[in-house]
Amino acid sequence: MNIQELQTIAQNNYNVNIIIMNNNFL
Image (cartoon, rainbow, N blue to C red; front, side, top):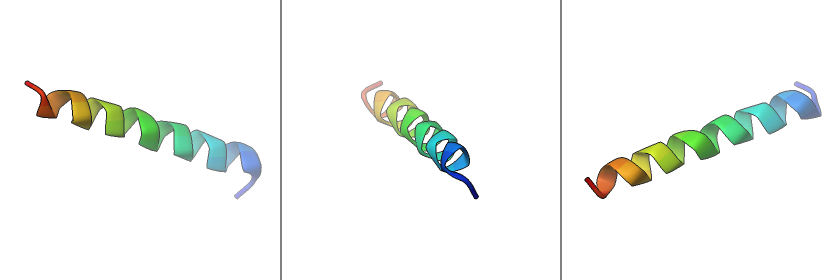
């Protein structure tokens, strides 16, 4: 994996965590 792939994975994980966190407030 190169740096760009790792950055993309990290961003995707961040976005998923935000969605999960937002759903927990519903």
